[in-house]
Length: 385
Image 1: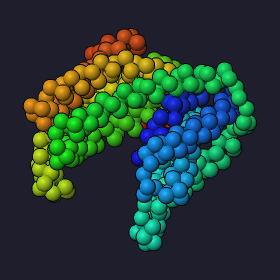
Image 2 (image 1 turned 135 degrees about the horizontal axis):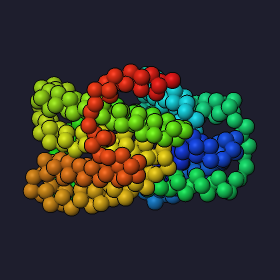
Image 3 (image 1 turned 180 degrees about the vertical axis):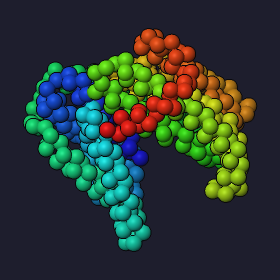
Image 4 (image 1 turned 60 degrees about the vertical axis):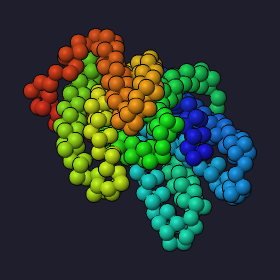
């Protein structure tokens, strides 16, 4: 848990900042990529120091020096995957960015099977698998980068300043967004019992599977927007992707609504029967966030991550207040209703701000056209190419 928290603190939003800077050619690309790697080294050292401090304060006797050392060494590899992914996406090399993730997961799974299941190394085996998979992929990433860029470990203070200035906005916006997604579970833990936390968590995790496609589309939109020279064409493409993804999500949500009474007991067991109502209640809010997922990719590609912060900070306040009011009264169902309200306010607010920034009427963004279906194949083909 500690390295995961440390990585979330020390990534500094550089992935998003790198996508924007590389895509927009803000600086010489060799110097820009070199600076990202310098920041990676500094962030890794900071992460290791924070981990040492955390373990020293936590003072858990069951953590051996070997385990602590292995866990700290995980941090550079994990940060490298995040940072390098930003470079590849900024350079419109989406396949390479995806490779970093699926190769890491494949190696990690293979090593866990060998070290944990076969050799019985338990927690140490899992940590070693995590470390080795991240290290191998980090080395793979740096080799690919060295083939495309002249990398020199040198401080370019103007580039560092620009990367960090935008990166901090990405980082803070991401933090506020994650709080919106998880504050309900934290408050249920405080206000209700552990059983209700489990039931609610299962329900939310099932419903959030609707975000997988929009999340992937949003990343592609982010990358392509950062590289796009024709702003109006990219706005039109984003509109098509939004309308079709939103329509697909509505249909999928209706299907899930009627299927979960049969699937939840089958997959999770009768003890999680209460998750059915949670899933059904939270689906409207989940669908609304689909709109935000795609539009935010477009504005992020334009270097406007702060819009997420401005819109979802008030939504977070609404989320907290409604959860504090409704959880004691209605339990997990109250949390689901509070989440719906927060997600809806945030997503509609983001749509309105997006409309004003891009100067496109809301109705033109949302209303599905026959031409959308005719264009979908061309859009998908263009995104792949």
